[in-house]
Length: 531
Image 1 (cartoon, rainbow, N blue to C red):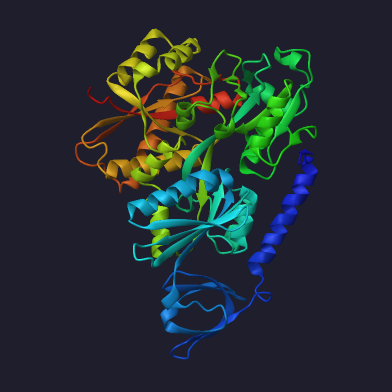
Image 2: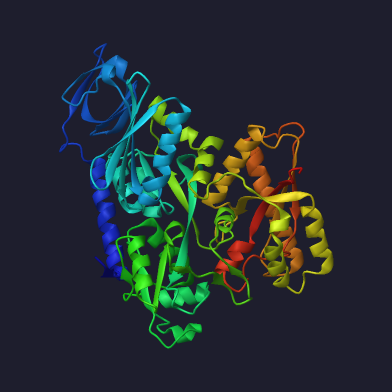
């Protein structure tokens, strides 16, 4: 089924209704089956709903709020009291199918192999399944359940205590963060509560029969806002533009509206045809030469993916390397949000394992851009360097370019790239995740004895001298963040130098908001591996 886009007022009303419902879910206990807890020394008696049990501690929702108790020190009366002798670790995921459809199942199976366990997948409904983890003797060790829905519904399940982890294709909204905080789940937008597992991207698609071979982000925004309605205005044939987008409640569709339309003060046109999933968007585009669609990086299929261009002549395609580095402007991180909550030992070990090199290797095998640092030799960056140098501003002279090349000499760029929130001095969520992963790699000895470089770049707005200082400050911000995660010192023999290169290497056009965002960055470089 397809439908036309909701108008902005309708979306606001829907969001308000959802938030109100979530508050009710977070505060209501009376409608749920309750248990009674009595302290073994007779000093305590409580009633409430069991929210979780990790093998030692019981979480209980009471009229006074959520509490956590040592289960061994209380007696429990009621049908839903956990049985410690029959305890099986449970971890419940809910949210986007981007993570739950392929990535996390591959991770669960990889985790089981790495720990000598057997992972049995059990299909429950069209949108729910679980993995039962058992040891070689058939003893149940853990159960990981998945509900594939939308990012929005994933947060709703968390607030209703029906999920432990949210799978999200966008950042948590301020309203959702407020609900979580009021429900006692902590600051879900704090670094400790969010993990970035992989990266996706928003990609504009056309039929192979459409002669258009690139599109400017500004034109993409104008088209989806209804300001441009004919391909002729974009250099194409005299045909009306037929617009397609996925489910409006998914994280990627919401990310498109936020990062492309709202970023330029626009709203989604009511004429956009919205589909239940990306495969339907691709099918609609292939069926109509005048169609324009937005889909995810992994579902392009046989449609033509349009590179994104800028008025200065720079263009970027959605390739694996460009998505890994974030050099593609519409790269979208895939998040896991974890509330302040005790997890069972296996559940916590699985969450921690997702950050390991073994887990990142699984992402590489299934063709998903992850956080692992992949080297990009300078010999493979010729097109990038040539295009960017050609688009550099008038104040970037030969001496500045020579200084940049001298700094890069003998090093390879690594894919983790650090960027800053729009209008902010702090690192964006993806970059904070990169800080943790790079620090962990340093701690594990991956770069022992090496000379690592943090190359700081700026956009071209303002005087070159000012931009030089800004790029130095950004590089130092990243260095300080990495050193802080490492406890304040670097391992002996390893150096982490900063080099300020100002506006010497633009990745996007400075006359667009997206281009400036691409240009304000810090790149990580490591010594080239010997042949």
